Image (tube, rainbow, N blue to C red; front, side, top):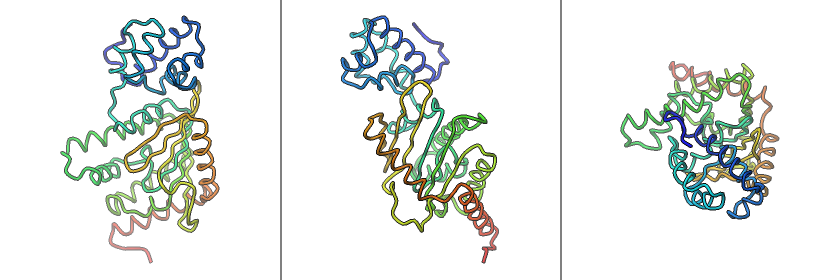
Length: 282
């Protein structure tokens, strides 16, 4: 079975996941039973079938052997695993595209889905100060492509909790920050997203050591993604997921209300705008 040549990796994973489900059912195996043979959880099998998780290269030959698929999964997993995103984030970005709800916390940056091109460019230049302009442009384009998830007026539901530090750090300068924060505020006013800010006054909180993303799907178990210093972990482990859910709930309880948060974001945006015009507010 071969797919169209123009099939993107995410769509290809969905197609291969459907074939995995058919093959498992032909073998009269439950997700749990197949998972036991491959030393993974049944929910992991479900996520591969839904296309929210990759079929990794070391798992593909075991699937072929267990399900009598010849070399099908070995042949298809390379193209299916191709990604424009950094390796530590690739699976999370691909799962994000299939989620019906995303709950996210960011400590130092405006969340990627909410960034403007100028803000994203400043971030990537800071990460890669010697990268060719073409590489920076490609990174920005990929991030903006992710943001098209919000073009749909209803889904995914995005609930973003942002540390006040992300508002106050002048990434790219005053003009870039004014535009970036106005963009976030506009999305909140249009009721496309829910956004809350954890203020400095809170002090210590439940996720000071990294960012957190929780993703929910129609036909697969939820996933959580924790990232710090360029290292990311995507997991469906129940204990880890429960801990991340608790951390997120604690963050929301510490944060300003959505109405208060929108007022703060708008106020800081105006401060940056006045600064850019050489007339700081007093």
